Length: 168
Image (tube, rainbow, N blue to C red):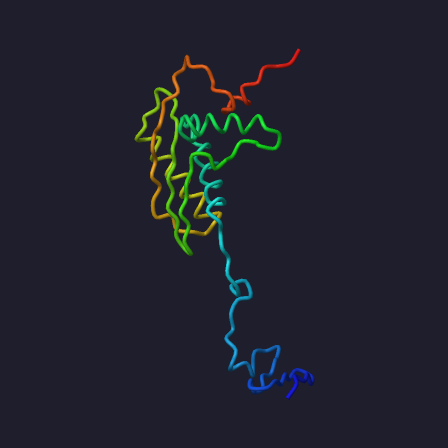
């Protein structure tokens, strides 16, 4: 039998009859769920990495993210038109259906208490990821790869505007 539509009654082969109503009566075979929960949302690793990277950079005392090698390649990428700085540099995420684990590699500014800084970075990253992605953060591992000394020159492509001089 072909599907027919008569008023609020739908009939189709093998499915019996279902009646739609506005007050909820007659919907015994249909579960009532919130329309916002129908379907599945997946979040890519890169999305979580960007959220975590931006949240980590917001913490005072974090000079940069990534190892020296990653920052060097990032400086070269910054010079290529359209290459831009990646907010996910120095961050790696493993994302599951409801949980995520993060690894961050940071460069700290000289004079900052590293244990306190790591705690602040963890709190900020966990708060941002859980709020924005709705994922439970099970761990945030932090590796301090370098310390930025006050008298060191900025590497090209880092936070100080790309290391480019002003053209005159």
